[in-house]
Image (cartoon, rainbow, N blue to C red; front, side):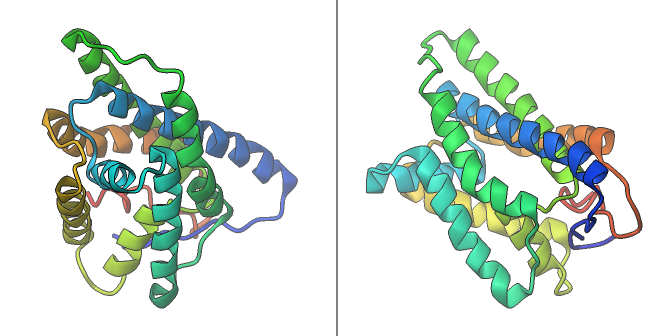
Length: 218
């Protein structure tokens, strides 16, 4: 199986018209799902634990930290010779602000049933977003590209993914990010759900289309 994403290249306006809406909806879902898991306050995904920890210590908004960390991760693509796509750039610059916008509109529930509803709903919506924005073939997000770029050097994708996420989790936890049952739920749930949506929405063009299995290392 491939350890890297290949970004689809095309000039046909019809291809743009069928892929860009998937990218837009995917990023909207991604930002909304992240916001829901934050509001659930039951534990975040490893990278979001990092984002929250940095936000706590800098006074920056959660979403702005998502953007800044994404930009920093993109710099790590340079020695890996990873090629960003349109989707990569749009993802990096928008998801954090979408998350901020949704956070401003979500309530702070106290009842455990509503918090679990936000967590599980956020997980599903996040997985849908991942399936859409990767499936449209316009480039992976910065964190996904870092993972597959390192894996392309001859390392198993699942090991690279695990080490990167454990590192993000450890740093984020040390900075005060929220680790809890939701962290475990996200870790075990995002792979199968992401696969489900990615195979559903993956758009094929030619042999250079991204491998729908690459992200989740199945």
